[in-house]
Length: 190
Image (cartoon, rainbow, N blue to C red; front, side, top):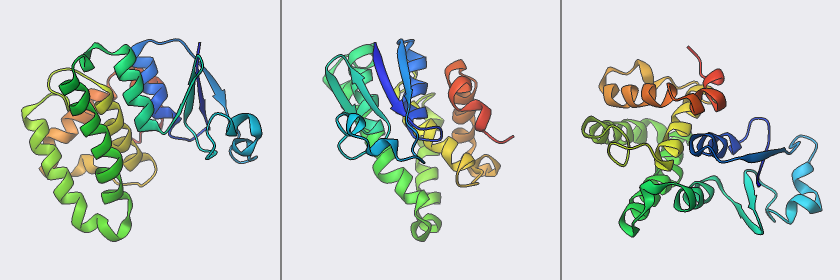
């Protein structure tokens, strides 16, 4: 059975959401980050950097939430059946983690980057139900998690911005998903 290693309030929730969406049985291994359990030899054998999330799938070990989403998608999700679909999926996961998140999380860049990123995302979502078109994918998990973290961790409520109507509707679609409710829903402020 696949093992997912994560902390109480860690990015493991992203992977958990996708595992729940895919209905893949998994064991969640809680790592006590405050006690430094991630620095213990048994966990460093899974991720030598001592960070969560990480997975063990048989003999295969993988860390970094974006890489895990891509792996699970390629292994279990038929939406990423072709090289082109896999590459588009990777594009959105990488964009979310390498461009969108730093552009908003870094306070020095936020004022300049947030409107630009949200307007482009809004334009895309005006034409598409999900990031890859009409079908939910790991890319939506990556983006939906970051939108959730804006509300949960950063106290940035993009839902109040009238210019982002398509992003707001998209986030609402994601928030209504049962797997989202089990993993993120209880933490989203009203």
